[in-house]
Length: 131
Image 1 (cartoon, helix red, strand yellow):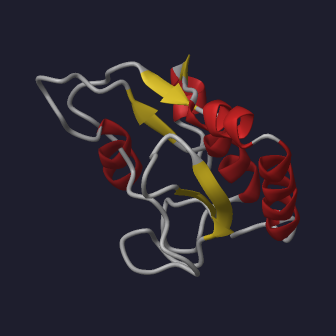
Image 2 (cartoon, helix red, strand yellow):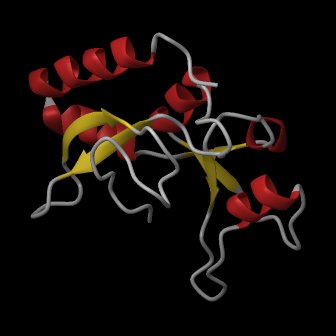
């Protein structure tokens, strides 16, 4: 279930983005290693530190099956925390906030939008592909 405050958070993030796009883009793109307790939180969005020789999404497997064969270090960022607060879209493990990236510079955020359905189906606006 998604919290009612989600749209206010998106509006606030877009206001901040207009004030300093470089800062917000860098902040949202920054990841910090987290412990297993945070990684296991039911709504906080986390992801694995990708091992270039073994590309697989342990976080996705863990969310879907509740277990993983191998557990690399997990990382979390600002958007993962905000999505954790806002909740998950019913029937999915996806958070309701997405950052739309600039087509010519994928390190820059154009705006934040609300995702209405799983990223694998459709959204209010097309969210960026997850790395």
